[in-house]
Image (cartoon, rainbow, N blue to C red; front, side, top):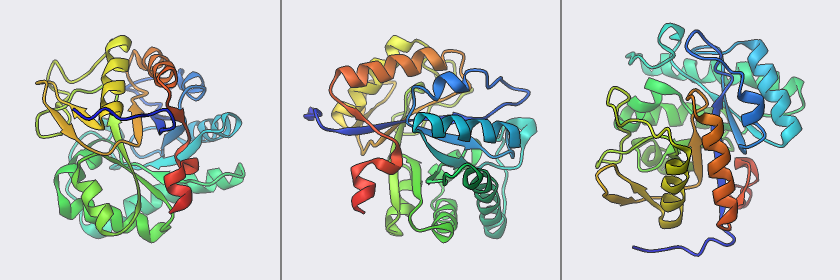
Length: 267
């Protein structure tokens, strides 16, 4: 297995934030924003509201964290995790509307939305469906060709974005297990989540060093990795984020917000 020299390698830690809802609290958001480099902000369609968006944007600005829109299906009753079939025009509007909601708040705080990462079922469906992935990619590129598109590594979303020559950051999930096809283990299965921070930090470091997904079976799949996602809605999110950050730094990685990474400044 190839083992990369990573003394000057850049990596990003991102987290889904502002997701206050009937499903979970956002009480850890301020602490997570001291740890992560980029925030994927819920835009009110699956969770969050103007107050939570304002809070995340303001704390992000204070801590030098870049902000991105985290658009989803308009489905707060299911936290955006129910699969919904929409037309291309409806998907386009869904993405643009949520971006604009967050961008207005960002501008009021002298910031700008620098990336987009779809949420939940919308993201999962696009990982598997090249047609939907292309619709999403075209909508994001239409908004601004310089937006960074944060996508699961090895997914159809990555494939479609590369065909459109977009700025893409490929992410892995710190607290999720992978199937042998590179997709996430379904949350319906017992082994979907990695809740032990010590296991999560080893899982992440191995994948980053080897630029390969670690599947639950032991299989490894070579891939590009620019960012590590911490889910803010897990009980162990804060402990996991701290553990991963410390371990990456101890092993020589340079943590950066997405919009200051060298690959995006050059492109």
